[in-house]
Structures are given as structure tokens and as C-alpha cells.
Image (cartoon, rainbow, N blue to C red; front, side):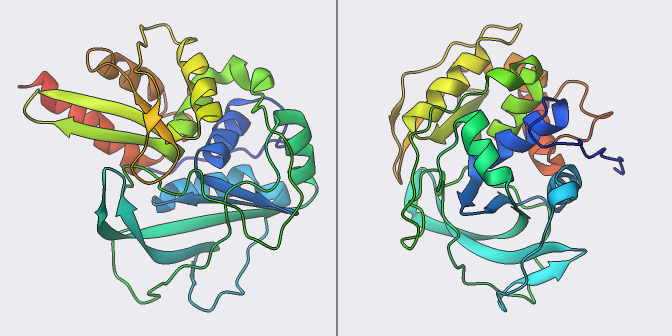
Length: 272
């Protein structure tokens, strides 16, 4: 699917593009000094995020273990499985890096912490042939500590008020950054959940309440790796999932592998 993404004049001006972008940053990104990095296991999504950030986009090629693919930093990452940390898997990971004053402006306007997340080194395999459509069920790094040489911190409130006009792409970005999809074969259901720290989960729960379908959720509980998680009720998950990805063909503001997995699971339970 080839779609032209229009870069906003300013990454802090409310728009569907910026709502999706900041959802991805908060869901599974890192902020430190004058850098923002967004992680994704979907190469197409990486290019779309880079297009949104184009006016301020820079790319860091200093890590010799990383491989460039059409301007997007790529490596292969081994991560723990969210629900069983004894299991690890290798998957493609693509990084989009943005530098400049936007980091301080974002901290001020959106209530994001500085630092947030971590710019950790990753053992990589530059010659891997793994598919670029690998999909992460969740991120175990959503609440990881920032690198130790950064001492400046803020007290975040994660204020999405300016972006709530675009709740759907904002939630979609958050879901792709820190959401999970679980096919429950025995129950004939699809489980949707979010994994992050409690402050962000509270904001996500508030945003879910803005959707036009019921969104009952469980109470936050400690995750097996770090942070907390909550899930949508199984009966509500299909309507929420379809609404999150409604009318996305014309915008391109989504990760194709994540949408394909979710809608495929929903179609499967519909046909059972």
C-alpha cells in the first residue's frame, strides 16, 4: 500500500498526523536531551512516522550494529514475551529519530517527561533476513528507566487535551506502541490490552471513553516485566478494534502488520 503522508508544519499543531505520531512516541518511544526516538517492528509504519517528522527528521548512523534501509535505522532485537518473561523472540525493529527543540516544546505542551524511556544499545544482526512485517504483541520497555547520564527530569501529566479532537489516531498510535492483541481460541474471543505505567493507562482509559462504542476495562494490574496493564472486556474488544482502524485506508496513519493481525483475528472469531 503506497500512501503519501503529508508532513505537518509543526509537530505540535493538532492534526491526525501529529496525534498518531505522539501516540507512538508515548506508547513506545524515548526522549532525552534533544532527541526523540520511536520504535516500531513495521517498516512501513517507520517510513510513515519519518514522513510526519520530516521537517525535523535526522538519522543517527553511529551504531555500527545497525543497518540502514532507505534512511530508516534497522536492527534485529531480542525481547521478552510480555506474559512469560522466560520466553524471548527475535524481531525486526525500526527506529525513527527526531532531534531539536521539539523535545523541550513537547515536554512543555504535552506534559511529557524528560527523559522518557531509554536509548539503550541492542545486540543486532545486520544481515538478518527476518521479515519487516514482524509484529510485537507488546513492549517490555514502555516503562524502562532512562539512561543514567541524564539527570534532568520533569513531573509529567501526559496532557493530551490539544489532541483529543483526534482521539482515533491518537489512540491508534498508543495501541500500536503499547497495546497487545491476544487470540483466545478456547473462548472464541480477541483480547485487547495496554501495558505501560499507571499515569499513561489512566489517560488511555479516558481516551477510550471518547469513542462512540462501549469501552469497559479491567482495573490496572502489575505486568510481569514492568509497569501495569489493563484490558478491554472481551465483548467490547471487536467494536473498539474496528473503530480504531476505521477509515485508515485513506490516511496511512497505521502500521499495516498490526492492522492486519487485529482485523484478521476479528474476522476469525466472526466466522467461527
